[in-house]
Image (cartoon, rainbow, N blue to C red; front, side):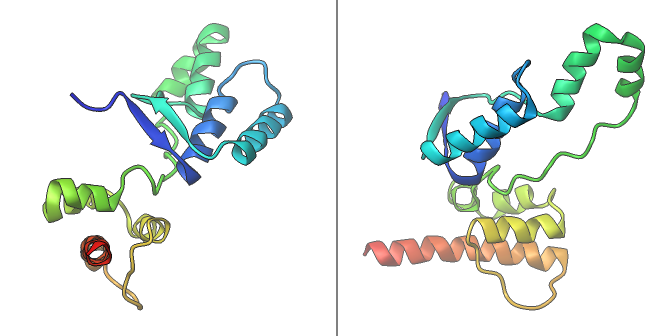
Length: 158
């Protein structure tokens, strides 16, 4: 049985608080921004229950449209959903390569585009070689960088 909670800090915590506060009905955008800012300043780490519910503009607009204008809700249901913002902290490359190995990390990286791969590597402090790399080379470099981070941790611990 897996964990029932997840610890968040840094950018993932900021996104969680921003989405949570933004999803509350009756709060003005200014009040939401002030509350979010105060939480970011005061709270260093949070532990949240899993699964974390989907929040944000798409979930919020669907909830508001459902009760007020059914015709508009039906037409928006036919439209494709807006693209989700990439979260470079959705998973840890070091944890995935430790638990699932090289192939497990490669399969998770297969669904991510090149610009987001670079953002993921930068956010998770995975070293990449200089220069232009193909998408496949970029994925392979992230796998190797994650393995190198593990090797560095083991060396530092000994």
